[in-house]
Image (tube, rainbow, N blue to C red):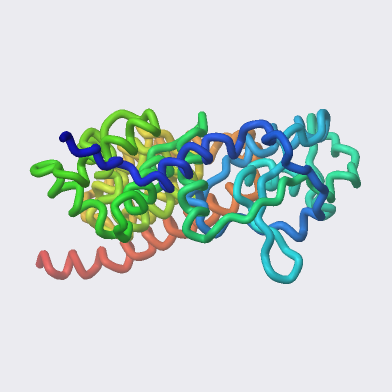
Length: 331
């Protein structure tokens, strides 16, 4: 008599992954929608997504201001009468832009009129265990259309860890072993990735997981600031931490991949490469002599520019101090 095949993905996990696909979907029949004060709601502490694009949030906020909140948030009850987001954190953050009196949202230079009713948010309240929160958040993130590679990798690693009962730190070494000898754990991952519809776990290991090998300062910029993957790999190739920090400042200020590549070749603070003065002068001078370009910068980017200029000034002062010593050595 043939033995029944053991399910490769535990029933509870398979059900949870399937349920996560409905987190952003219309409310299930029979679930009651209620209004809760927004300031009683906290974000999901297991949210793998760290960066929320400010421009996209503002666009969503304008839509909510015009049309209202079309889909309730999914929250779970917490002690002290508070709630924690299970699904819908972007909507919660966008509503916050509309209810902050210190920073009114503007459209075409005009502040949007306040909508007091948005201080209360439509929610569906559901009991969700801590162990399930991470999985629900990870799957919801993988369904995003604006998913970047570090958020995808973080969410996928969280799901692999939950499937195999590992810590996230153990995932890379485990996958390296399973590529050679898949066994039952490999079959479990086959089932997980099939349910997610995201290719194969072996392809994920070979092509995407390596992003986590980038230096921690670069990974932090990807997670917190939304640093583009191409810029991240370019900056991450620099072995010197001070040079990476200078390039990260340039990237935050809006430098393109080409400009970052040129800056890396010319040498930035912390590097040993000798700068090529004519090219560097044109690169910097063209921007700083354009009054319109400088005046168009936001307040945050002006502060970054001021920090960069201070670094440049320090660099030249240090060069002036070092030059006599270098001449003395040459005598």
